[in-house]
Every structure is written in C-alpha cells, then in structure tokens.
Length: 107
Image (cartoon, rainbow, N blue to C red):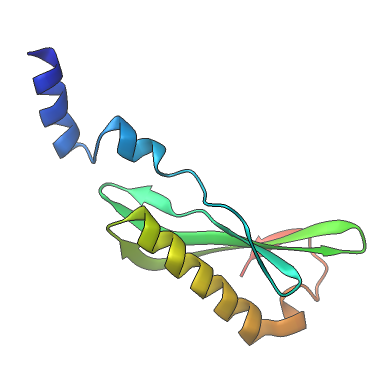
C-alpha cells in the first residue's frame, strides 16, 4: 500500500527516482578545438536546455556555460538539442568566444 501511495505522489511531484537520476550529464563531445558537455536541467517532468563549452588555452581550461528557454519532455532530446546549440554558439562566435581569457562566464 505504501509503494502505491508513493507512486501516486511521485506522479504529482515531477517523476520517480529513475527520472531524477536521468539528470546526469551526457558524455562530452569534441567539436573543433572545444569540448561540449550537455547538462540539461530537470524542471518537473521536463528538461531545460543547458550545457557548457570548454577549451584549453595556454594549459588552462576556459569554460562558457549556457542555459536557454527551450524545454523538452525527454532527456535524450534535451541532450541532442544542447549539443546542436553549443555547436551553433561555437560557429557563430568563433575565436571571440574565449578571446577575453576569463576562466568561466556565461555564453
């Protein structure tokens, strides 16, 4: 009986234990001289597009974080579109994305 109630409560609170563990980041992907990390943010039953772009410059790893308004119902879709968005950010900004030399900032 307790597990039945727990399952009902999880439906109204945004998911189950398995869904909560699905928020871990996907495998990093290389794109040009950058590394893309898709890290969608779980919001209820949806996942917000979020990630980071890393690049090693002079032995130091520089990071650009990004979060967008797009939300998806599946983690796989969120990861796929996060990678696409990161590639677009890299292509549009080129070398200027890391030109300021700051260790970390939002893109």
